Length: 90
Image (cartoon, rainbow, N blue to C red; front, side, top):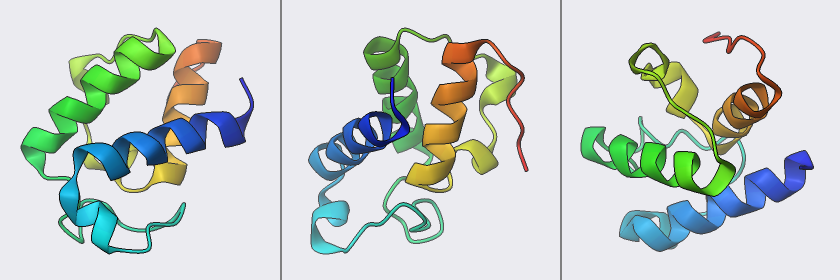
């Protein structure tokens, strides 16, 4: 799946699921956690969405803030999971 398609689906989910996102201009590098768009409970919603939408499994070890910082990082995370490659947290 192309990067842009993954990003668009993630952005659409963020906009739909998190009301504060609809009041901001959320780009690929907008800090979702730092700006309060996604909180700790929201991360669980994002994980459920990613697992269902992209047919991936998110392990407990994957639940680090670095993976959920931005739409760009979420996209990289999904791409790595789909490809079966190790996920970098940097």
